[in-house]
Length: 211
Ligand code: CA
Image (cartoon, rainbow, N blue to C red; front, side, top):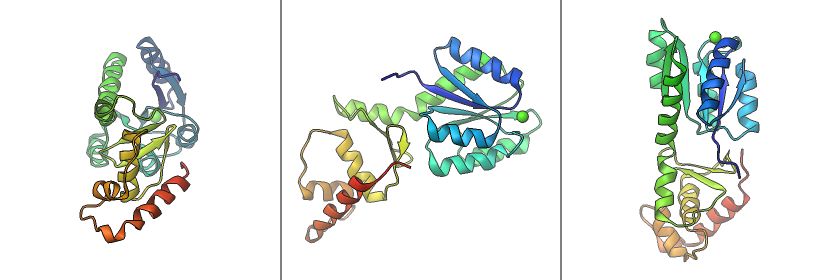
């Protein structure tokens, strides 16, 4: 498995793309780029992208609208690129839960530093998971703050209870749990007369397909 994080750049100015790609690759990242929002969505669906660098002024879409679409499907961190005059955009971006933004013109070194900082922040949840267990499941990534789990990079559609159950199982792949242990973990006020509901949720998790 290749662990080099892949960064996607959605930016319609080729000179800026070239500069960013060069700086990222120099720092050991893999970089892919596109110039429209539509392409960005398609590439995010098809690839395991660790972080998106998103120009707010793409030709076919507003970067903030696009970010809203993306957040509905992926738990990927985003660094917005905005024009210096986009003061209002900064506010909107932060309200959207933006991980970071940079105003143009920016230094490519500063951008790669931000990329590293954002990746450190957003993988902190996974690092905590690793700490609890010597052999966490290699194919799942858990994002505790977003209550999301990815399987092979694809976001799983899970209810709150399903998330909690799967999170526990992923943390200890080889461990066997009783129904009541699962109830205790998944429910605030476990009612042991309803243990069979655990079975139902486990069945749903087994059927869940990545989106
Ligand atoms: Ca632009």
